[in-house]
Length: 115
Image 1 (spheres, helix red, strand yellow):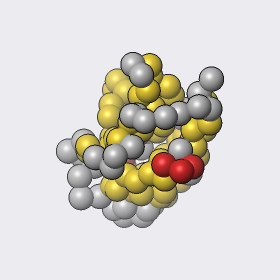
Image 2 (image 1 turned 30 degrees about the vertical axis):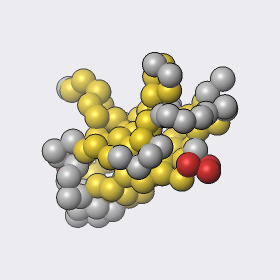
Image 3 (image 1 turned 90 degrees about the vertical axis):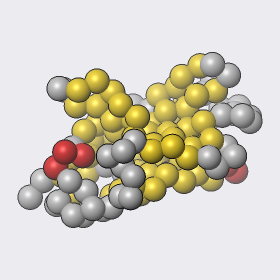
């Protein structure tokens, strides 16, 4: 049984930074990919960034240059460092794990960018 717990969201002013964390528990082996998606009431859930256990990364255009995804394979933990945050980054952010064809999701953490 795989379980994801994401955290680190909050309220931040435009231009500020936040760091999201997600810890995966259970028996997880290579290969796998972890990442972050986000969703608002007006938009479908969209990919923000992902990273394989080998370290290959993929970013949405909106995240490039501002967000950095990283992971600690020993801890099965993925991080999302978000800098230069904008009001349009406001969303619920979900941790994601793709493992042997199955998608796993965290419970979501709210990020609000507002002055």
